[in-house]
Length: 101
View 1 (cartoon, rainbow, N blue to C red):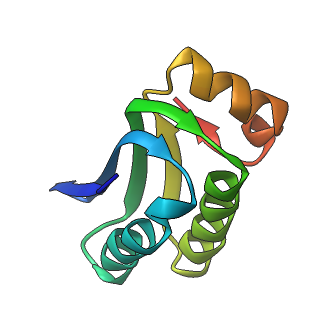
View 2 (cartoon, rainbow, N blue to C red):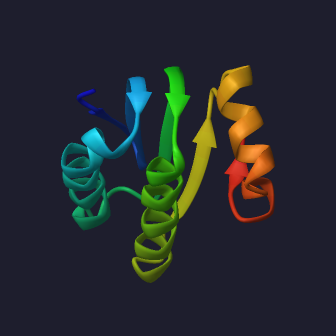
View 3 (spheres, helix red, strand yellow):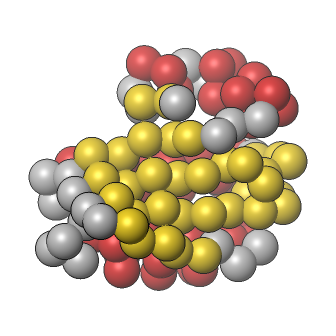
């Protein structure tokens, strides 16, 4: 998986596809750090529209991103989650930690 970044106004979107697991760690971190460092970006969306699987390492990456976003004083939302992704996020109680749209 190679995450892509889209910036529209003050919203940065990280578009994921395929399996979101440890193999995406480096690329995911790089694109997220790009958005965090961009002063024009106020909100980061992680788009799961094309993700069919995520594992526990992906959950860890999301938690780290949440922490970094908070330090940067920006907001974060997980968007376009498919049913399989929603199930994993619900089991992990991520609805209490993240805004999920």
